[in-house]
Image (cartoon, rainbow, N blue to C red; front, side):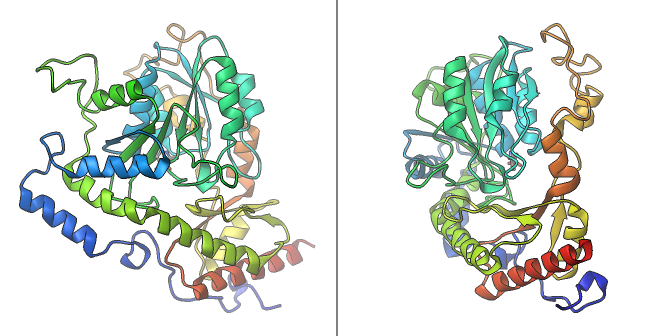
Length: 413
Ligand SMILES: *Cc1c(COP(=O)(O)O)cnc(C)c1O
């Protein structure tokens, strides 16, 4: 067994892998260029002024998900805010969610004056544990906001049943999980809740720089989200504003790029799946570590590796082999950010995390969600994944994983 690069051995790989910040790791082509020029040549860069690309993008998104409505917005965070605003919670109402997510999930809840209530996650997938969600239900719960983490579908069938029993809404944050499925032949994520939310930000499967999309089967929900993204201005009826809402419009320029990118999405996900399957076959059972086991269902936003312990040693050793890896993903669970620990919300009020309007003063101590904390502090390692990986790239990643697993478990023994 060769010496690990971290201990002075020869690295598996010395050339960088393609990434989402690099033309080699993106799927932009002649069609995106033509779409951008089409918008510029037409002089209408805004979509509410009649730019044609928004309708194209929304129709493609709806068709991909087999639902009647899609609503575009300016970011994934905006898309989530549209979904929460469509639920229209009272200040202090509660939305149960995960502490293992992008802050956009949480900002959408707080911005609409609702309280994020954190449930714990599965120790291997990092996705919400339905039993923990059920334990957090209260008479103030208005919704469950589930995140499909890293590309793996969360247990949405169970969560939908739970939400229905409790009489609350289910919202899905699908920003990392385009076209992921909870089971073979099941519909894609985003179609199990009242609204599915997606992001077109630079780091996602397809991108227009920034942008957001919501899908829904309910016409009234779609209409309310559409209004919320345009200052609640019912343009066909006159110049007045129905309720408090913001400007979250997507521009025609963004919509043009996004519409073309979305046509590439099924192929992007398929290629990520194919290369993930190659990797899983190549590594087999890794001592001391666990990879997702369904390449055909996962969307492979990243490659999450859950190790028995010592995630920093794994990340350092893999990075030294030429395969960049990050320990823990987040620095802390979301509830340990200053927004919660110091209640940095609206001025010094602590609103809406204090009573009233909340039913109690909410606090966010260490230990609130122990399984999420353990993933961040000890067991979760995140590797990048990309649809443009060549077979040789995947084989290098497999070789690095196998080498590091053997090296680290031998040291431990
Ligand atoms: C990226 C992301 C968001 C936010 O999307 P933006 O477009 O960056 O606002 C929300 N939730 C999750 C899970 C994400 O990965």
